[in-house]
Image (cartoon, rainbow, N blue to C red):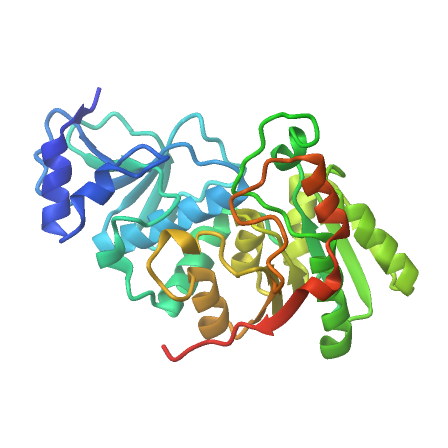
Amino acid sequence: MPEESADDLRLFASAWSLDYEALSNQGMWPGYVVERGAESRFSGCPQALRIIALGRFGNKFYQLLNAAMIARRLGCGEIRLDAATKLELLPRTIRGIRFLYTDDGRSDWAALRGVFFTYLGFERLLEPLDPWFIQDTIAHLVAPFFQPMQAPLGDHIIAMHFRGGDVFAGAGNGGWVPPLYVMPPASFYTNAVKHARESLGVTEARIVYEDRSNPAIAEVEEYLSWQGIPFQSQSGTLTEDVCALLAAAHLVIPFGTFGEAIALLSGRLRTLYGFRHVGCLGFLYQRERTLIEIVLQQARGVRTFVIDDRRGGYIPPGAWVGTTEQLAMIRDYPESALEIREALPSAP
């Protein structure tokens, strides 16, 4: 069994001028721990990073991205995944970093273990954010974990993703729902389509959804039919849905890491629409612009648009409880209450 000591984490934080308190206390996630073999003498630099609880598609993307960036800055030669985490694709070695499950029985190693969902505590290593470093990390150390995309959709097609699943499983019946996951109203999607038709030459739509529990889906389908806009609705396997979204040049995404992972992995993306903001993790950092905005705008030249609630009458951020009133608001919130603006890049 590996040994653990708070002193080792303090030594690590001191050696790299990092915030020990932030590393040891990650709020809703377990704090970071240095674990080492019995014969290891820890000098402040771990030989490996170990990711626990890798999560689903979007969370998996961000954990791999953050761990890979941190490993590059620290000079770590290994990134380890729990044996319970099985990936369809597990590249063995990329650019000198070896990927493997758990440890290999060695007693002379030291690993930094944690949930790398954010890079809180590692700001001194990664900020100011370098969009080209992040894009390079995505392209070479993260993208190989994910399936290749299908043939591209035409530039005249806009793809829209609708979240379902656990966000709506308890909605309307008093059950639990994740409060952060306020899904946008149907009018967000119809506003995006209207703007894309007028400004980008879009003439068709592709709807991709997890399941039909999101009430915005039917409203948007009815709008498209009424407007005479050809569309296809799709809910396939995860791989099929991911490939369809990766193939799009124009993408509309709700709150959450899934759509952001698609946008950051895509080699086709030219335009992205977000509700209220672009970047669901922005509230965690004291920074004007989010990681996804910086990478897409500066390293990729992607135009990003925010459709905001100018009236302020929609479900507040973090206040999703899944009542029948909130479900009705997703269906019926008026287009006139929203406004669209381009999130222009600022000077680097």
